[in-house]
Amino acid sequence: MERPEFTMGIEEEYLLVDRDSRALGVAPEGFIEDCSAELQEQVSPEYKKCQVEIGTRVATSVGAARDDLRRLRSTVSRHAARYGLVPIAASCHPFSDWKTQHHTDKERYRGLERDLAGVARRLLICGCHVHIGLGDDALRIDLMRQMPYFLPHLLALSTSSPFWQGEDTGLASYRISVFDNLPRTGLPPDYQSWGEYERSVGVLVNLGIIEDSSKIWWDIRPSHHYPTLETRIMDVSPRAEDALTLAAVTQCVMRMLWRLRVRNQRWRLYDRFLVGENRWRAQRYGVTEGLIDFGADTIVPFPKLMTELIEMIGEDADALGCRAEVERVLTIAEAGTSAERQRAVAAAATAAGADQDAAMTAVVDHLIEEFHHDL
Image (tube, rainbow, N blue to C red; front, top):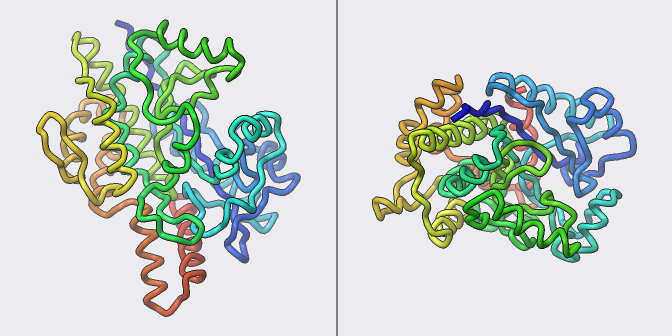
């Protein structure tokens, strides 16, 4: 079997906040154009006017992706500053109200508003998508069947959206709760062949319900535009290094599954009902509680899970040159994700006498610092 390239591409969505108030701002006329003059097609507007999306070039290693991601973040930040704005990479703004935000005036986004009504208007959320180059369609669909087991692990490690409209939701990723209101989201169906997948998508396309598979927003999907398998379950990471760690783990898990396939083996396919329970645990707790090990029939603490994962994909990390990034999952598991850090900032501000508004502003200040930490 021909070895896939396992190339990597990272897409991130950022929120633009007003430099003075820390509330959400609006990308003014000229901002995207300024960014595009330097970044070309690697930057684009997003659904809401307060958002911007970037995408790395196709990278052969996590090191190359790191250089590109830092350049993209730095460039967006530099141009935003000219308009009194600053970017943050968090999946929900801590206090701004979605009802005051408006969508970008593009036909695709006008179509979303028409088709999805009030559900779309509430989509004030940002995510991170990781593309892994596989090439072969049969391989893409085979790995898509096996990857759902690992998606809750990736979600838990990425969680960055505990607050919504100034309130602590109690969830590590409230973004998932918002996004799951859309159709064609969540864990993908268990298609057994590429042809079966194409026939299902074709039903909706032929009926005019969707124009193509880019309107399917599962947690993982075959990309419509590229020969990749696109993992979409993750919150966006305030720190660039966390995003790179998650991308490296995604790349290595897919390589591990390919190794099994070469040996005529495969990862055990668990019922989506059971995987969905782990997805919920990741959404609710992040890394502060464990996930279910279905083989051992027990809940395993997250640091132990990550130790086992590193052992499982260590060979792949060495082959792909990303051992350091993969091993960093232990630091995230033990120290906590952005969700825990945001709550700690809010608690410290409250303990110092800040009211709720001031505590949430302190969280935004923290997110601004985290965005620029690795640049």
